[in-house]
Image (tube, rainbow, N blue to C red; front, side, top):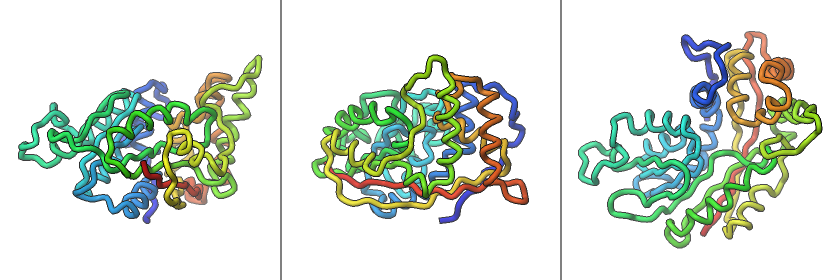
Length: 294
């Protein structure tokens, strides 16, 4: 896999307010592609192609779906973040109505992609064929409560798949194998400055060895293999790194406990050990995936 070094968006204002739209763009333009080696490794193992009917839970801004569609897969994405979903729509369905196009549409992409908001995923295509692959590429196991909504979503999605369908869960690797873990500890420390101190969903915590297996067990899935993938985070400069990392949502509790400028300052300081002579930032990481069957 060739890692990607993400440069600042041309014309982007690093001091722009961190509204929902700005954060979604930072995710789509800076951070999301850091997980591209994970997508490719999973698709290689699952032999994703024209026979694949994939449901992507938490599809974000759609990069993983785009990669699968490029391999010929029929893809459906579901996400609760309207801003990210709008960016996914622009990537996958640039013409209005593509996700509702009939099966005889002359453009193949119109028959291969569908995007839905929140729950209620629908079968892919007009023929109502069920899914044979369900993916969760939003890594779990790095924030308190990050799998709570996933278990019911999986339980709702499984009946829409063929019997014996494959489900792939993904998560962060061991903290000692993830350089970014040291930076994420800033989120936990700043969140603890809240008075009175509180624990809340989204607060960073160290990844546990059996996080993925725990989700699988609660969702009634049977593990059937796993793998690890190198996903280095590479940024053109510290400013891009800060924007990308804050777009993940892992620093939200810290922002609520202090303020965004304080979080940005301390994250930038924590990134110094990973800054190279040319000003770029490079953090080796390992991510894990768990293959399950329904």
